[in-house]
Image (cartoon, helix red, strand yellow):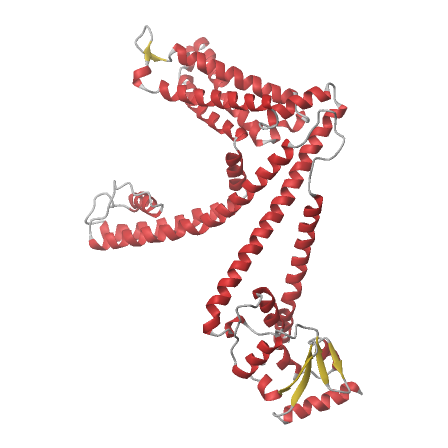
Length: 479
């Protein structure tokens, strides 16, 4: 019976454009004319006019009174006058004291697009919304940072508990903490400073050995390494080897020791020395393998990888490595943009400069010029001569600025996140005390961690609920 009465009322509404509907928005009652609502057929109230059953009505409103023919909406009545003003004028206006997030949710619920915001309010509205989105992003960054730091801290705590079941576990744990956590104690700081000095000394001697002022000739008149530099080199190799062996001996899990990138860097920093020593012994015993001497020279240059050992003692370098490891999509996007730009502008430069400049007479030669220009390096070794070539170069430089800046912003945001996460992790690890054995979990604010988790869940549910009106509209349009 209710459905029949409703269909009759709806049919009457179609026949009489002056008919209206009665609505109740959180206690705010109003009668709206059908012709006013039908001007915006995609909105929620206008879709009520097309309903043919009570079930379809209850999909658009919270309740319906058969007796009063009244539609009830459990929404904020203070914001509904803005919706009424939209139906009367066709434009939205946003007051300065309104919460942008609540206003955006409200107009999305009623099916009103942001494009209807009047020009006098549009600029301020979108600026405030961007600020809100930036704050939400920072909250999500803090959330991810807290979660990741907590997971890393649990992994650190789990590794520390493995020593309880091992021989000399307490002593080995103290050495492990001293070697792998540079700021844990005074002894660990001393070892960290000494390791940094050895790395810098080794790199300095390698650089000085390439200078003619420090070259030494042997009995045959061929250049050889200065004995003083050899002493520094051997001391550095001895220190790096001892450091790696000590870490390996006290590691909580020997089978997964080299799963850690810093341990792989330690191995790579000393491996060239021992390979060079082995190659020299083989070359001396077998004169036919004299070409191995060139391989030894290349391996000696690989000592520069020792500079990566500083990542163990630098939060910034570890954060940079984590950023690059987790930003391969952004880096790939940057390389793709550069490849497209270099290919395009190299052909343009070749077309306009092939008759005026010998340096830009081939497309492969133009690749170098386009790469230098798009990355804004500007060596100046190859320059266009004609006016068309200079205009092409100007466009190439401007395009390079835009191409490089866009992905760099995303990478920088990730670096900020990983740096904050690494600092939090270091502070938490240094507060752990294992002198009297492990009695409790390291200090972690579980309340904040749980709050972040709940906040993320509520945000996800909110996004799902906010997307439902548009999904319903899409389904109806498809039907």
